[in-house]
Length: 440
Image 1 (cartoon, helix red, strand yellow):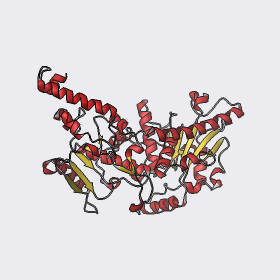
Image 2 (cartoon, rainbow, N blue to C red; image 1 turned 90 degrees about the horizontal axis):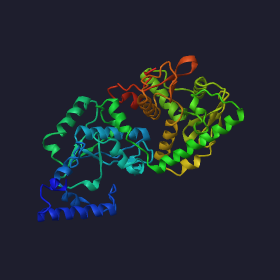
Image 3 (cartoon, rainbow, N blue to C red; image 1 turned 135 degrees about the vertical axis):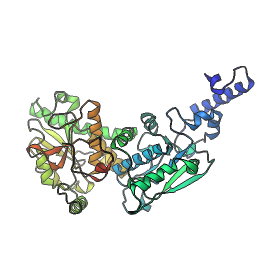
Image 4 (cartoon, rainbow, N blue to C red; image 1 turned 90 degrees about the vertical axis):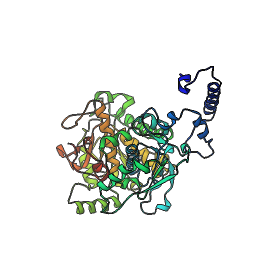
């Protein structure tokens, strides 16, 4: 194998020297594992050059490792950042380049960009795990992988009404060939990737999202919250002496006490935003009052067994006790403060808090959200993918595992409308900007 790799015989002095150098390189790699990015990290460029150039220029998954794409810092809310990251990945895929690991934003400032707190991608999501799961589709690289042989080409993204989807696509096509493609790094400058034109079907985005796995530290924080919710649910059910519940049979086990998660958007800034959106769009199914949400959610499940309803709400509502009042008998509302897990959240920046809440909602037995919320929409996309892997392509009119609902759209029996993502959509528009055209 090694002799074929170097195209020489073990008796050759040259081959023996090459083998010795490779052995030394691998030895040092084992002692000092490669990390990304590289503050205080040994640069392995020279060691990499010992290996066959064919192994460096293109990996076994067909994605070039000597050509890179760099994008601006990714900003705004957690799920806007996930969409922006996926769009950057798909752009790199179109150019057949490795995406240099971007910076995310730990803080949330929509207009004051200079106040954004950058956080490395691998502080939130598992870097190696991402490349493993997305093998052959997209690839992340480190800045320490750069050779600095041909310099950087700055690619200015156009803006304004004249910069159409067609012009943007043509710019990308031209950048995938000719003199631009000769550059080691193409650096896209201008607006953040969430605002780039969309050229890819929803299935491609879903493929990238499936590769995003939280680092263990954050996942364990979500485990604590979910465990606390189920623990309270078990205690409440043990007092009722009721063994029957409104979910499937396996949920009656102590380990799997079910709960509902509700992404409850009723804070003032959201209500102002959604009212303006209703006026501009002419759609009257975007905003939902607290009373509407409580009434519709209450019609999902029976009251035979007490069920914890976890309310994923903005911090501004944690001191508003009225969001805990008026719920149907048997549906017991808890937000992070009443659950006594708010200290878990407080020790983390905004982005991590949102990631924990996303996990808690995603793992719920039933999820209810707003179809014009990116947070809700991405959770439903993930749950839809989960059901599709089980062979379920529609939740309409049937009872399914991990059902999702949109409380802003009325459904059967005065409840919320059942919700599955339309995986045949040609773009991510419905998820990025919301829609009332959900699949059921």
